[in-house]
Length: 331
Image 1 (cartoon, rainbow, N blue to C red):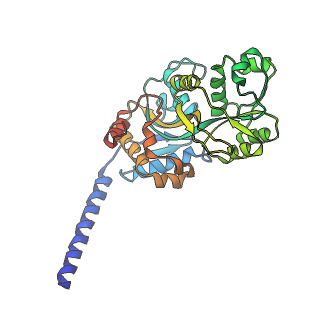
Image 2: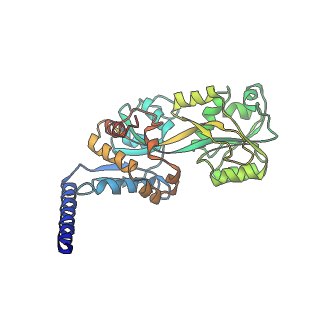
Image 3: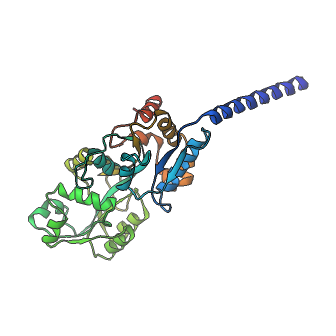
């Protein structure tokens, strides 16, 4: 009986080896024309993310067709892909929407109507934090000349852009606020946190992951209130710019006893309609089925779930991505 059992084990092992060899042969026989993903700078999160996706996809092809190129960011990348210089890119949802539509304050040119979304690889949440001394109705009163000190993020950043669009819902813009005597302080995330802690500003905006350390620093340094964004403002940001409805759960921050309504900024892998359905399907699959490897490339993926890929994609989906999501029941 022992001999017979050993023979069965050897047969099973041989079958497994033959299956693996067959699978490897299929992978090695697959080819695809070279494509390039334009990401972000080598020191940011986008570059290692794109590199990991390329590594996963390339394992299924002969010749490693997916390449990576560092890019200049959320505004530049849609131009690079839309013009045909590269095939896949990463951008923020609102900038991707504006590039797709064209003829706006960011992209003063015809829209790139061939751009297509692959998936949402993560979100940053728009935080509006006010010192307890600030009138809770301050935003409604700004157009009437009320003054306050704002931290509006670094010029050119996603936060600076979001604050501008947020304030327009209350009938004001940066120029109006300065003319009325409000203080507008721009700067990087940590410097804005420091300014809020030191009471140089009383309203602090940041587009960043929920429970990030800079937000915790800000809200623990002084009594603070997270502003609950009215539904009509949220809806305008969603409809016009591709933000996503979001909620900061009660208890996320000290003294936050209720859920806070806000919006999320999606981070989108995107491509063009003429890029092959096959390779886009493989890119989508790589992201959806390899969360642990994505976490190893960028720790921020720990709080991300693959089902988010199909949510808040800002522009029409590419058929390759849509096919994968329908197979998974995500659409």
